[in-house]
Length: 424
Ligand SMILES: *Cc1c(COP(=O)(O)O)cnc(C)c1O
Image (cartoon, rainbow, N blue to C red):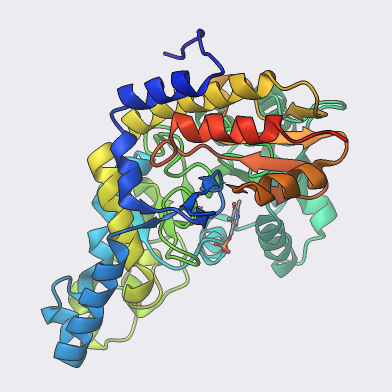
């Protein structure tokens, strides 16, 4: 339940922290420092903080490698042969899936391509892909080259849904209508779960249903949704999804990505997948036989053996998620984001508007501030005063109060610093 009696004082923010049962998670992370104090870190949507346990877990892996050499594949404390198995259970709770529907593997854009190879099989008049206009550049490039690979013109084969004139976010009904209009020309709907720029969370269940109603697949890039908003990929009947782990999942720069494939698809051997040995049936992996036999789970989209050193922080971070739970995080998130929004509305000397939806059901913990002018100047002043936020051309400052490690006091400190920036 979001509180409506917020107060814009430090004492009030600190009182909320006292009541916050998740407050102590802060202690589990390293905060960048500014003048000897924790910076006001509002950038977990771009790169999550480092769990303090990562250092010794990396040392453990180095020790096992030194001690065992190749035998570490089976003798390491977390055997490398099956290292990826450490993640499926915990990830499945974060994205709302069965354990066999998820795997930690590759990286985001690579997974997007691999999944599109399986689910985008254009044929006859069904060759179009629908996505949100202004999607993250990597997604745009991926989809553009997917359609080119089959000889289509991106301008024809990609349908982009843009907000109405004068609006910043998409209307659910407009998305559904566009899917209905595209009808049997549509092969795949590929949306971001949360738009990286506006912070809008889309109604994935409705979009998936609309896609299925016209005979198309629905797949999502969950880079900004995973670990931010509780998801129900299985129950929503999503066909496929992928994500990175270094944003809300705090797994370090370039950390291992993840993917979801609905069980009705991974169990269907007719679904084409590009293969590598790690996707093969594990029992036969070392028999060196001809002929790819996919595992009967999403792990069949794996290519190579697990990049262990690139997964250690993921292991550390998912432990914290396991202890905390997405539901508790979501409750705090709505309240903390609501508080920061309340504070921002007290400021009237700067020319920004919040373009992230005001409805908590349509957003996670990110707020995007669109400046009419001097946005970059304000951003630089925030940085000089110990705020770490994120600047997006042409005129947006994105801030993310992350419920796992940000406090109400962080929100208040952000507000105080912003309030004291003149508009001179
Ligand atoms: C962060 C992000 C990416 C980054 O892709 P990588 O392959 O991990 O470099 C791609 N798409 C979206 C929507 C993102 O937010």
